[in-house]
Image 1 (cartoon, rainbow, N blue to C red):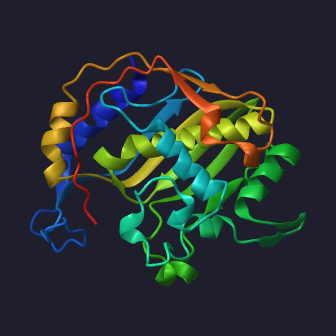
Image 2: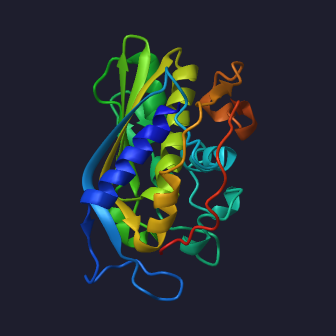
Image 3: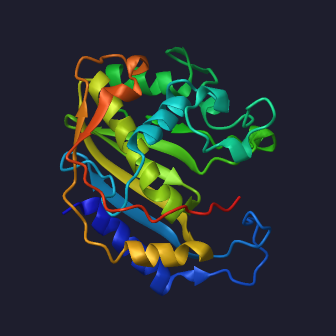
Length: 276
């Protein structure tokens, strides 16, 4: 059975049974009708996924694999902050009339910085180091730029990645300040697993481990019934990830270069309300 499903189930049980409830406090997020969106949360959740063993996509319910990849390419490959460059509408609530989400996400990754070896943006610096100095302990990115926070329509949730090569395996630590567990947990796990796979392939490495660190992992009040139903389901075997082996340049990857074989998820839980 899928290990990713089991990790998700245990995390949700822990939040529901042992989490802190912010019911009655002055919370920022609101539901579409203006009602405060309360949560149960756990602080400092750490989940580990061995990408050499399986691709960690949930089988408990369908996850839009292609849309998740499209978004990670939008951020890391296109380095865009405009939803017109994205093939889904998941960022519409945070975009202005021109489609911009401000100086957030891809915008930050595309800023060039000066280093001893030359001028790079953060993505190209990672690619340079993986090729020229793979055993460096300084291969990381951060998009939580305090100087630009006032010009971001949403502060970054998944805000840093640390890459580490051990032998011939590329590992990564994803740091996330906040996460809506039902909506975004596996979505982000898929995305950053794919990112590790892409960087590994173009660097002559193998995908190793993704460590996901979540400062505030929460389940919203209106999501509780859906989560309780979901974690009672039986996990299915994890599918196999197939990546086009001919792609050797990170900037040549397309959504169509990724396929899942034998992905047989359970039914959808229906429309999930999103707090903004």
